[in-house]
Length: 317
Image 1 (cartoon, helix red, strand yellow):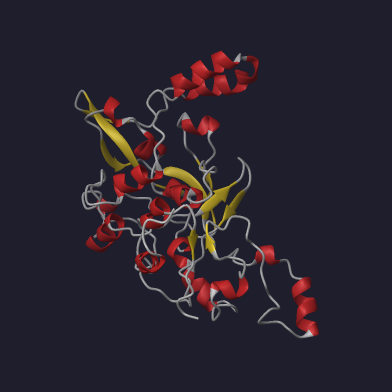
Image 2 (spheres, rainbow, N blue to C red):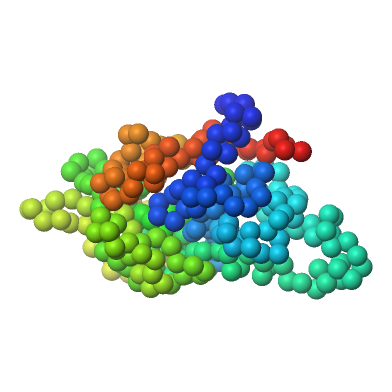
């Protein structure tokens, strides 16, 4: 059910065009985008996953799209079936409705594998050396159930470790947030994120390394990571033997592995970081003033917290 007018919501969403998310969002809007598609699709690491093996990359590099043969077209001129959010499965492309109308062009379109379009523009992580117990069972892009928000949640994989959102912080009252050590990574498309801690003013893109924000605590005066690696070996053994356990035994073991883990409502998860009362001190983490403001005031969260279905208004027709 809608909680505010479509027009107001659309203007709220439109404000985020050209805005920033973490270290890689575009600061300038280049392409024709009257429907606000790049409000979401501008972010690298935006991925959907139907299972643990196959991912679909949804990131669009705005500058590369503009320089392509289709850069003068609005997204919905080709993706005509997309009328709302979520638009899972609405992947058909109308190549011959407004363009490619001659017989020769229609034959060419029919013989062109459209799955190759946007491939050079898209960015995601192909592999990340994550030794946490989470990754024993959960894929790199774990959010798959809620088709309204799964791609937006999955893009956080490249910027945060799981425990930033899912840790039961009441179990660790003195926890704080800082940059994790660099992890080996391989990318599909252009790399994104950072290798070095931005506070050292040496942040740069790397094709082989990634550093993410993580949760820490002080243990006897020493900085201790709360990424759960102490259960990794036990979780691996459970995963191998799980099918031989009774339902009750499986439930008990899963409760043990998730003893410090929370599942959160989307509205809670969004507002915990993207608000003036954010648990993350973005300035202290090394982000500049513009990025800090973009992260705190990320208006896109209104789309996913206020609506189950959002229909694009045709304001520019």
